Length: 413
Image 1: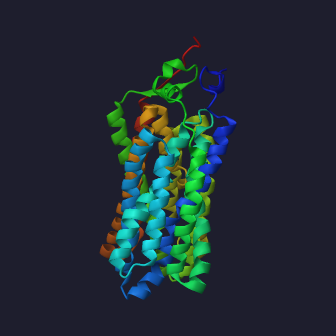
Image 2: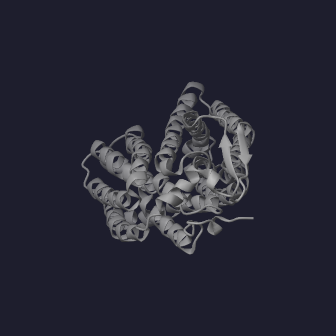
Image 3: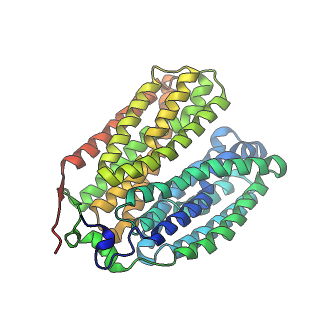
């Protein structure tokens, strides 16, 4: 039985430095993902100060998601070419400037532009591109490494709202934004240099030439371009389904008479469950592969969406929300595993970034479609059914990939 560390020229994979690099990546993601959650936390204060309605106050979140989506693709390409350090420094500067300018915004339109152009795009570097870079340093434990790095985004969702809430209570949302600006620059830039070491090109090329490895590799009877397109469609479809509870659970609880606070707690439960799901999915992906992991997570997510329809009591919604979080958290990071299993390693940043961009598009599209369905029907029941339909599309794509996949073992030369 051969391991990646026994292969000539690959002492870098799954090494002690690889695990140190993972810890550094999680720290960077924890800090750099603040932009994804800060805008949600300050939304009520921004609405009150600018004297706008809720739909206008939601525009900065939308622009943040657009910037995040585009940033994953653009910076992913830069990581393939220049490594992670330069894009990460640019990210830190963008976040520092974005939060500083955001704290000085005089109206919601300037605030929204800053969120999208600087904060959303800057935050993107700490997700898809960072995950793609880290994936080069692992072979046997790639799944858990990618999942742990992706969990930094959810950890930020548990850390930053608590910090910002306290600062806002005493000093206001503008000071809270200035705090994030300072922390982003002071932490991310020095820490980024710990990732300066780049894996040699011949090690990266191993994944593009699997015949050189005496380990199991996957190949598929689908062209790389068609596979990329299918992964993008899968990313959109799973996240249209995923967005229904994540975006609308608070409003759903309010409609049922349980209040906004209960909905917020259910959202937190989903997020906590998502962290556990990502880590468990990482272990699973190392053993059964990315496609099977996505298929399993998608099936469980679909089951959870079904459960939301008949179970609308307070206690049952808490339980279903936990089930939903435990189901969906590992789906998106597993796309990075699929890319590394089937597509050229030297293009991982661009290809992972493109799929992640499509998942964000799916989240934005799903949130809007669910709201539109609610406006047309006066109920979220049809919106859940819509999510289930999109979820089944994702399952169908994963089943197709699994069917067209063959595994081969090459003998040691």
